[in-house]
Image (cartoon, rainbow, N blue to C red; front, side, top):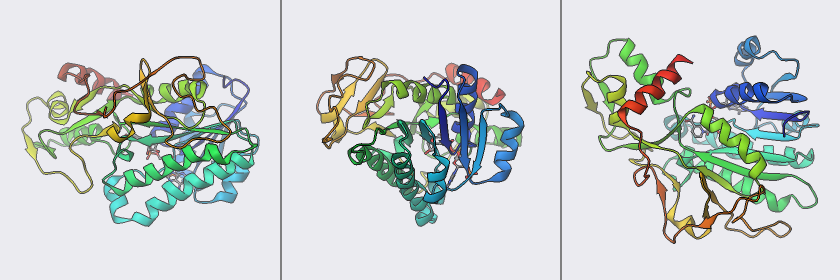
Length: 334
Ligand SMILES: NC(=O)c1ccc[n+]([C@@H]2O[C@H](COP(=O)([O-])OP(=O)(O)OC[C@H]3O[C@@H](n4cnc5c(N)ncnc54)[C@H](OP(=O)(O)O)[C@@H]3O)[C@@H](O)[C@H]2O)c1
């Protein structure tokens, strides 16, 4: 579906963006593939690896609506991946996080509507479900903006959906590269925030695959949630350094013990498909198909039980220490 089409990726120089570009170039022949981000050095470095003639590199900030509007001329599909995503940085710089993650989302929506973009997928996080930190709260606002945008679309053809998932193994600033660095520096112990902590876990490949597939499944208004495994953080530390003692350092500001992807309060409009859930909009769209029990490919779902919650503790699928070793080796070798 991406052959001869123009795709714009906000945050295209980030962990997700680079893998997305790589996979699209491997599988399709897009007309243009646009990276939209702020830092010229990251773009320069990326150009050394991704220099296919269809590639375009646009310097721009998602806070700058005018620039985004120009960048989206002639664009068919948008993936909105640009975000500030470090929990502690967001707690200390709340307005910066609000400007990028919320006002930035609003600018992406306006530019997509103005330019008649066909489909937009915005990336979200499990931290947006029942948020306890500012980062999660801004991503929940962003999710709500993208869902509601389907109502603003009116005569425009644009549809908007959200993809929400958990920790991406090996992404910038995440725990696997952090532990890896400590181990290489000869640390005498690995710091663990809490002995019971669990997290949802997926690879970048799985994340990009899920986004690509959802472009075909989306009707507009869904929050797509993949069924993915959980990990115990103590198992992760054991997989990476079986002989190192683990030191409990306490939960950090804004951190949860377990993450939620589908909150119980949303169970009344959450549908279970074979490999994923869809949280349908709680609002009704005036001029759209509101049947989310069937996706755009004709696949059927069932409504989950009232009160059902999908969280990283009650998940039926946990990665073993052996599975984590294999996954970490693959990710760190990339
Ligand atoms: N990594 C995870 O574990 C994870 C889990 C769940 C969801 N997500 C979501 O997935 C998305 C992508 O995450 P990621 O891991 O790829 O993040 P990342 O590696 O930190 O990349 C972020 C990207 O956004 C760009 N960016 C930041 N602020 C911007 C702005 N104001 N205007 C334009 N571009 C901006 C950055 O480039 P410049 O700095 O050059 O602008 C960079 O290209 C985010 O929305 C995140 O919330 C990530």
